[in-house]
Image (cartoon, rainbow, N blue to C red; front, side, top):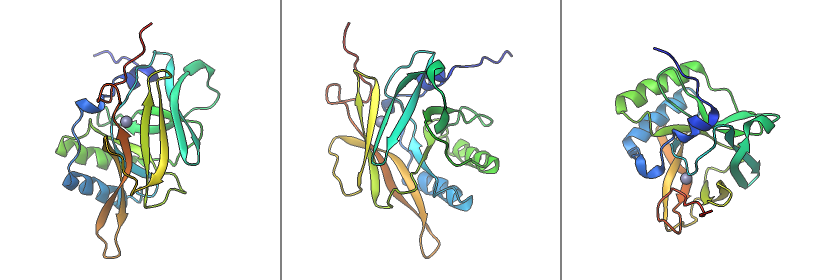
Length: 210
Ligand SMILES: [Zn+2]
């Protein structure tokens, strides 16, 4: 069989829209969280419900630019980038955990043993296609979460860091982080919520007609 190399843009576009994915159950999340805690990855990485909002051209990548409490993720032409680091990762098979969004700075390395063990679990639970690894900022409080909104004009996504008590009426939970309680149990907290598009009511952006 011939293997076909995909561009970062094609990898991104193969990520499903949120409406095409199934949210993991709390029991599944806690099982996944136990693995993050076991491998001591829970301070650096959270679990996301894998989804995209926009379509990229094959020579583009989605890149996050973070300014403390505001994170703007937008398409950039691949060739014009000076420095590019992975931001969010998702499994495409047991051996492949490609990034589908990028960053202007580097993130902690993900141990290979953890990647293999997490795949085994996700595969058994049949959630490998809908779960991703998303970074946690070092200064992000345990009681804080990101709220995502999208802009079809610029094909961008803006996330702001708010208190977990911040109410977001028309949204879905798309990210969770994990902690070990004083008793040693694994606990989870919401770390990312995605606001529904005000026009479509769905997560897929409608592009302005030309
Ligand atoms: Zn979203």
